[in-house]
Image (cartoon, rainbow, N blue to C red):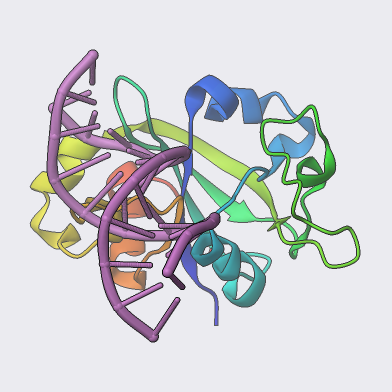
Length: 158
DNA sequence: GCCAACGTTGGC
DNA sequence: GCCAACGTTGGC
């Protein structure tokens, strides 16, 4: 049973266009430093899960592409790099605290903006629309996933 | 830049 | 274990 996710990226750091320039349009989803988001990657994500690629902290936040989970969870190396913004001095290499998965972009889409998402009655309950939501990785219900891929006119690969 | 919401830390 | 203080996220 596959799952669906919304994953936030800051375009200033790793936009969908940046990812499309990478080999196989695949990016190691580095920098998650929240336990709830980490646990989703570690415990619930499977290769092949559907991903809504979301741009946050930018002029026009919204869903900008469709992606898939392309690897299982593995150690996020940036936690051990003192020069990295994501360095975590408290993490021990024998029991790494932070992990990541690879995410592969399948389709860049138009920007389905946050205001548009909010206006759609069928998307009520989408976690990213909830007040105070800050989680960078959130589960998406199958009914919401199907609605969004249909709106964007991309094949539902999951 | 502001601020609401939420997570984390640390004193007790 | 409680909770105040502080830090971060992220829309606006």
